[in-house]
Structure formats: structure tokens, C-alpha cells
Length: 167
Image (cartoon, rainbow, N blue to C red; front, side, top):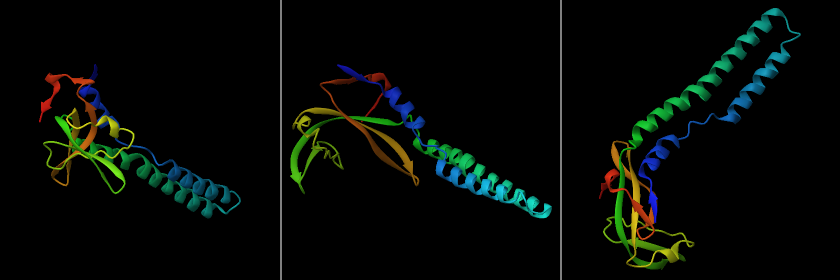
């Protein structure tokens, strides 16, 4: 049997948040700055100073937008995630049925049944078979919201009970 590493899931939730620098934005600003500086080579002194000032201003705007704002956004998102709250539920698959030409699986004991519509995995969800439903609790607009991380068959996977908040 394979073990589901809950600590690994906790680390992945916070480190996986995007803080990427928009490369396209940097390239566009860089091209504008280079064209401005190249165009001011044979210009009078006053025009050169103005062009260099505008280029420096655009460079600072680029640094703020591409460097600082994603870091602030990452901090805000990290605060919202609260990675210590991972819920694990052990539920049995209840029903398989077709709806709008898609196959669905519902689980017993859920208010809003988790529904699996992936055709490839549908044969795995036999009625009565137990699964671990792992989700994270995320604060969004002051309300808790669960986001599904994964559904694992209980006969193939185990979970370390000491690390869990069982629901």
C-alpha cells in the first residue's frame, strides 16, 4: 500500500502559488526603452535628458509591476490558504449514473456530493468502494471554502492518522 504524505501536500499548497514575473511585460517595456534610447543618440542635449528620464521612469514602473506586485499578491494568497487546514474524509462511492453524455460518481455522506466526471477513472469508482477525499480549506471573502486536492482509493492508499483532522 502507498502512503499519502499530508505534510508534502501542505508544502505544495503554499509553494505552488504563482509569483511569476510577466516576461511579456518586461520584453515590451525593454523594447520601448531601447528604442527611446537609440532614437535619442543624435538628439540635442535637452531631448537626451528627457528621453533618459522617461526611460528611467518606465524602468521603475516595470520593476514595480513585475517585481513588487507579484510578491505582495503571493503574501496575500499565502495568508488566505492557511495550509495547516487539510480535511480528509473517508467516504464510499454511492452511485454511478450518466448525465448529459458524461459519467458521474457521487459519494455518500456529502452535502454537496463530490462528482467525478473523468471517463478514464470512472471504472475505478465502483459503488461501495471506499475513498479518501482530501481537500483544503481556503478563506475567500471571509468565508471558508473547500477545494478538492484528490480522491484516493482506501484499499490502495493509507494515511498517517497522527497528522490528520478527520472529518
